[in-house]
Length: 308
Image 1: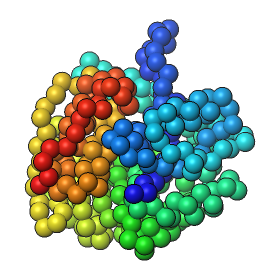
Image 2: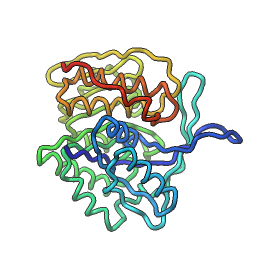
Image 3: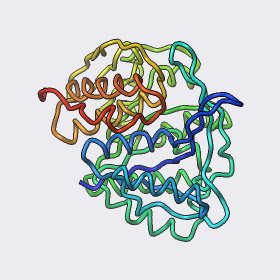
Image 4: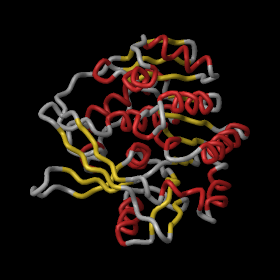
């Protein structure tokens, strides 16, 4: 199974000024990619890094995690993006980004990008997010849409996490148009109810959110509801799959871990509800640890339950 994920990997710093905190890495698609690699797959992460020492260290770390880095372009002038994370006493996180000139944002300007996209078109599963779309202008998004079309034409799966961050877009309307355009190409959609409300300006039922994605042609929709669980709408089944409450230490990467667990279980022929339960287990374990990507030992023991 050839899995390709497309997004941005950044340097992550945490803590406060004057206090020593860890320097690691993260990014929504990258978080999911590493989690999927830890579940026994070898996903290829497509992005761009610089030619600097930080970029090489990121490349080495991702390779050590089992990520296929053959689709990573190297930018001669730019460096990786950077974000700082703070976590409150309830485990809720907030982010500050420095990524406007990151190497990943200039992916399509690099001469090797065409060859990398050609290789990515052979994917059996292509995964990206709303944040991936926000990195690029209209021309770049059209190239991503063409990639998704090519994957679908040869029978591949296109999975899309509707991750919406307002600062990445000129307006919510621009984001909505881009999401709807890409939704027409997706096989599986993994939106979050909180993001949907932020984009559309009002709360909706999970059923209403699922219906909107289905109306664009998406066959399988999983609406993430945070601590309430996930609403699964696929294969003629519409079901709320609850999660077991945990006391979070850091909620960073919870949705990304859910995506990895869900897709890994679906690739192993688990039903949508069983896949959602596994996604909850992986996400629940992830939020009990610091950072968007916990240590390998923290989650490597998590495995799916019986197929259903």
